[in-house]
Amino acid sequence: MTLNELIDMLARQPRVAVLTGSGISAESGIPTFRGADGLWKQFRAEELATPEAFRRDPKLVWEWYRFRRQIIREAEPNAGHLALAEMEKRLPHFVLITQNVDGLHQRSGSRKVIELHGNIFIDRCVRCGKEVDRSLDPESNEEIPHCECGGLFRPGVVWFGETLPPDALDRAWNAAEQCEVFFSIGTSAVVYPAAGLPELAHRRGARVVEINPEATAVSVHADLIMRESAAKALPEIVAHLQSVKPS
Image (cartoon, rainbow, N blue to C red; front, side, top):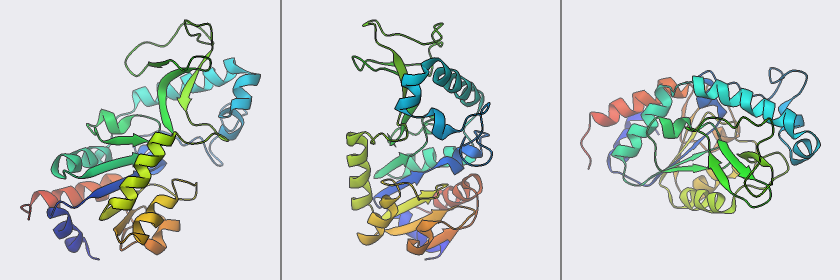
């Protein structure tokens, strides 16, 4: 499939599902905290983002997450985020599935967002389940924030060893199963179950578009590969889409 064929297909307003990963947020200056450059103090993400780490030292875990929240607060959505928000406006059957927890898609104007791994700005009580959105509210003054019920708050993200939120995962599977065009953007597609979404869309007959500077596991299923960053490729697609009338 060529880029022009993709634009023609999008102009017919098909059902579209998009999966984004850390690559699109990295373009806004948000580090992944994974791999060789992922150290914070002397710790790796795999050592801090676990239920066991929180039980062992909740103060340390909260220190790390406050550090990450500050980085994200100072970041801005990039051209890739903004282009996806524009695509949502133009395509009535559009779902955005993200593995990111930074909320940059929502800040760019996207509304049909499925957060597979939660949101870093949510405080969730480990005892009663109450959630508090800190994306606009100030941080708690407590080193270890507590709920009114007396339980500890934890970051509202999915940690290593935890399952994805069932509702979010079901909605993501349904979107991949029913879509006609599937975009895989800035994700290595190696962590399941999210990694299975492009494959499912491919099996169901969707046209798969990969936007990633590097080859990934999705590449073998892709009908169109754009070896560019999201901030470059997505505005290009939107610009072409704006120049054609819906069929």
